[in-house]
Length: 116
Image 1: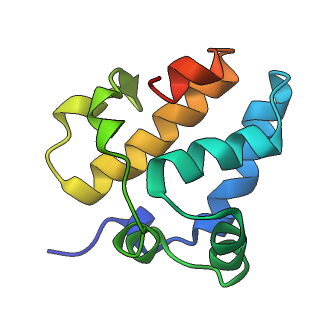
Image 2 (image 1 turned 30 degrees about the vertical axis):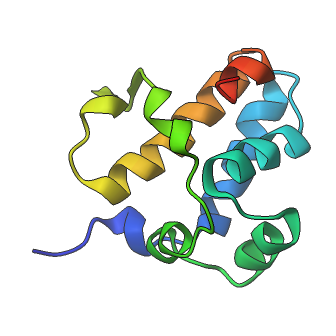
C-alpha cells in the first residue's frame, strides 16, 4: 500500500496557506506558530529549522518532541471527516493541525484552541 501524498509533502509547502488563512481572518503568523508548537512541542527555533529544511509531514510528526496529550480533545469536521474518527494515526495528527488552524481562522479564542 502506498503512502498518502500528504505524508511526503513538505510542511513548508502547506505552512504559507495556514498563515494566509489565519491572516485573512485577522489572526497572525505568531498565533499559527503558537498553535503548531502547542500541538507538537517544537520550539520556535526548531519549527523554523524544520520549515527551512523542507521536512515532510511524516518526519515532522515522527520527530515531534512532545505531542500534546490534550489533542484528543480536538473534535470536529475537517475535509468532510470527523477528526476524532480518523483511524490512521499520522493522518489524524495532520488533521488535528488543520482543525486547529481552522479554529484560529474562525476567530475562536486562543485559550479555547489550546484547550485550556
